Length: 109
Length: 115
Image 1 (tube, rainbow over the protein chains, first blue to last red):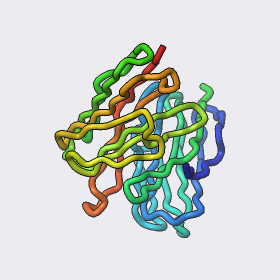
Image 2 (cartoon, one colour):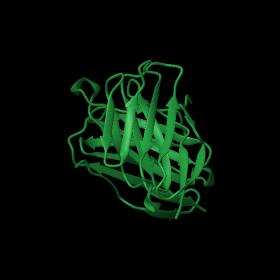
Image 3 (cartoon, each protein chain N blue to C red):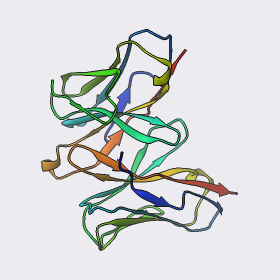
């Protein structure tokens, strides 16, 4: 099925560093969702974006809805070991959600 | 807070067994979904339901059926389990789109192993 492209696919960072990842689509979305999934667990919704250009924060996480409505960005500031996991974006269609390929984050203490 | 619960975290079943996976949400969501997640394949939609007794096939419905008798509960049934159905199964729920929110919430997942 269709997937959203995320980059990078994976990244190792040092504890305390800031992290950026992005999600791109060939189609326009009216909503962008960002999730985090820990190993063996279900995805947890981090941030929902509803308006082009919108910047929304949730603690150390900040996400932006791209102006073109074809992309979105997630930033994590001052990363900590528990930020480890897979982050993925999602865009809702009619009853169906399109999911990103995921960015695997590993934090080195 | 939205809560989506799944009946089991881990299940081991034998080939040919009938398997029931249950999901309950407590936020009065109209939409409910069943996905399976496999390494390298991402999340794939099996079935979804937008109302009680209503169901729609997703991308990979073969070998599965669903039941939604109550708004809060959505069951996934494997009529005759096969080894290729070994996977992580995730339930999710969301409001109807015309209620202004597209936020989809997931349960903790059921890791099913068919031997």
